[in-house]
Length: 438
Image (tube, rainbow, N blue to C red):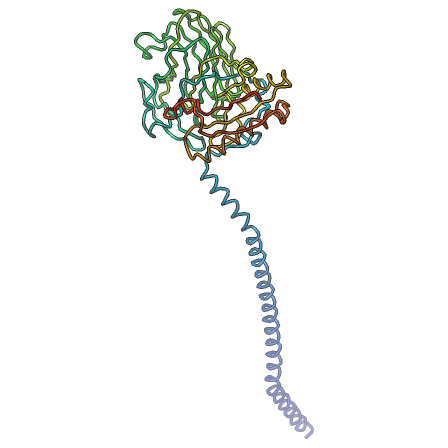
């Protein structure tokens, strides 16, 4: 009986347990589902927070970048404007002392003074681009070109041979010759030879065997220095030769301004401000010189030479006598950048001449008068001539300690020519500075 009761009790308990288990499963499941929902919601909230923070950071960075661009925009515009201006004015003059431009101090030992009267001048402005110049002769080929970043026009020597300006004929006992030489930065080739010579009867064709000549070799070199050489020929015999290196003309220091000054047998040669040669017996005393010839053996593109601004002037300067006795000294040796009042440092020799006279004669007062050629607008030329005269006074005061109170300035523009304005030589003579005793 008791066993039966116990079985009934166990059955009841089991029924209750199953009932509880069957009823509690949904409740537990609901509880676990709630936990999962809470975790999911918390995770989503956390992600939204992260997304919001990332978006805020992104927006802040974008704002910062935008502000930086706005701040940089005026400077960028200014740089673009400067770059555009530079492209419009590729030959704009660089102020003295600036990077790439020599200053007057570097020319302090430069004593070259050009001849008084210009009888030949060549800047190729009268020739068409691509043509061989009308006043020259050659047995090779060449063409007039412009060079990026370099003012003016240049004669490009495109093949080996001789090149001679036919306006150079009889050369007197006292003359000066100047010219500019340019080479590409990739230069690799033979030297250029400039010869002052007595041409044979057949002309420049056999210039290299001239009985009487001074031959000057010119090269930017293949290393850190340029190279210059000399060969002196008297009566058919080579009497001497020499060579030296100089930093005045290299692949990167281009172009070079070369100045030759003959006084009877003596020849002085300058590359920029450096006197490379001073040869007391360069020329034989008797022969009559009549030619300037440029010769080159180049046969490849990298050995090209370019020539410009060839100027031949005669007559020894007589600064003291002309200023103190005649009351006026005229010089073509004070040079300026194109359409500028900046005095070129290669004017140092001429400026030193007049400064010496003024220093030794402290009571002398002068008027400095600038003159231009007839190219361009009359009013602009007048203004330019006045500014150039003022620049000369400023240089004499600063570099040579001449009191400005002793120097008046004026300019006449193109109104008082001393030569014709229809030739290059005539225009070069009209571009001058006069010193008038007061």
